[in-house]
Length: 124
Image 1 (cartoon, rainbow, N blue to C red):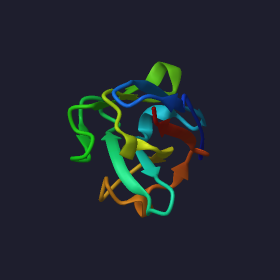
Image 2: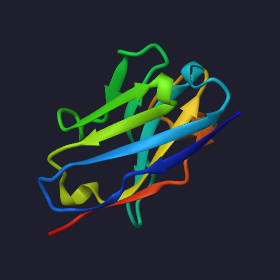
Image 3: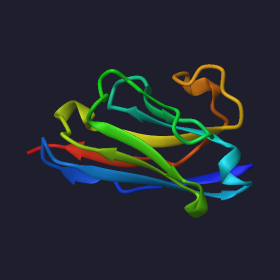
Image 4: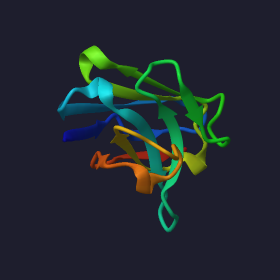
């Protein structure tokens, strides 16, 4: 089992940047496939980005491709989400998630472990 703690959210102006972090404790971090999801007020949770347990394999939602970057540091037990050129529609609570074996990287129901979430607000 692994415990995840999300951090790094805040208030940012449109066009700005933020870097989210998710730090894990518990089982060996490197065995997990990792992802970021987000949930905006009144909307369903949606997939944002994925990073496999073999570094280099990443996948992004079309809405963030080219603006967001997911990365992991296994030595630090941390996964990051660098968010650039933020838009107002990026306002949401962002969650990291982990699973050992994943069949559908975009399906949140397939992930076993979740962080508590960190609020990102994009507003002028």
